[in-house]
Amino acid sequence: MDYFGIGSALKAGAEIYFRAARRSGRTTSLLESLKSGDRVIFKTQEEAHRFKRLALAQGKEIETIAADVNDSGIDRIVNQRKARGRTIFDHNWVEARHLFSLENEMKLIDRMQKDFSGSHVSHVEDEIAYHDRKWMHF
Image (cartoon, rainbow, N blue to C red; front, top):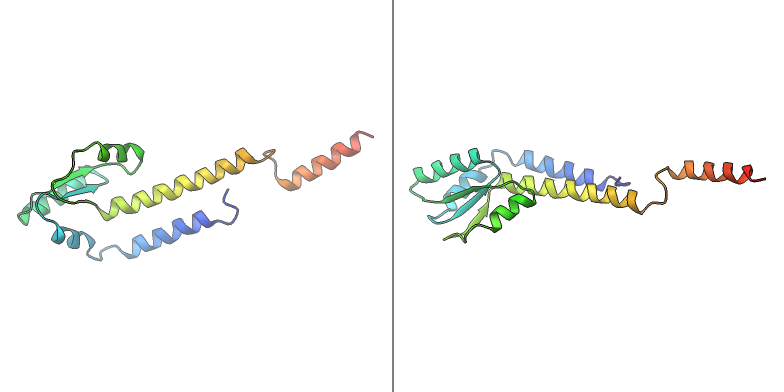
């Protein structure tokens, strides 16, 4: 467990930012910046198809890929041929990847704390057990 709660605070702060940034025009801005040949990565196939239709309506032929934010999703992206233009990650994908990374780091810290500790009993209980065993040997 993150004794100080830093991971939880970072995750909460990120989620607050993500909610505050909703409906701020990021999708429209991205769509306007694209040129034919660019590639955009999305979390879901539905998002990818919707965005591709929007781009086509503006006369832009772009490539879209749906890929999970986990490591197998990253492998899927890496194994694609190079885009003719830029490769850009949709803001929803980037947000989800950051949350995924934070959660993994929080789990890693929890696991290291347990693995590197002597016993899985709290410190106070260890002290009580130690003193009880000490008196039992007399």
